[in-house]
Length: 224
Image (cartoon, rainbow, N blue to C red; front, side, top):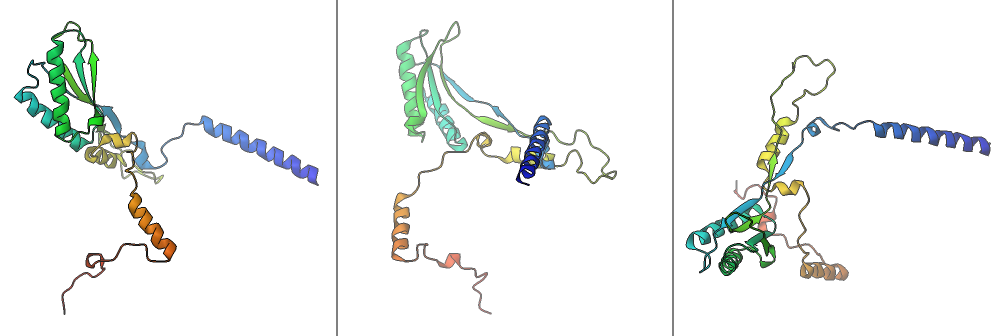
């Protein structure tokens, strides 16, 4: 009896393995109708070119760098790179302008750790200082280009454009398309608050915050 059971189990396992290998070879389609459309994330870095000056950044460059710092803050951009020409032009003027650019960015809210200096080979072109940071753009699908007969649906399946407008709206409304590529880093936990909660828990006290009037479930305070 035990020998027969072992043979049956071996045959069943072999059958399942064969079925699984056959399914792997098949191309998996969209699990739901809304997954048949995807958002394409494209890289569109922000670039600002500055001409080197002996006295440092000019007033117009100060305004441009201030606007770039504000745009960087709104978009939550990545590291800002300030590139200076390695050989061409006036190295002293490039250094002063690049240093002023870094100071202006930091003064307008960019963390110093987010700004780094680098050099590049200018080549035959006019040597300029390049200030850049990565930015991404979300591109949604183009909907409504081809429609089928919505009244002829005997097999009760969703129409071809189902889910397209939803995906396109998400692509148009997302604030930072980089969030579609990878999650943001979590903020550090509040160690002080955690210790307070643990102390109250050990003492058997209520660890939640006190309830105020704004947290009440009353719809209105009108006296009837």
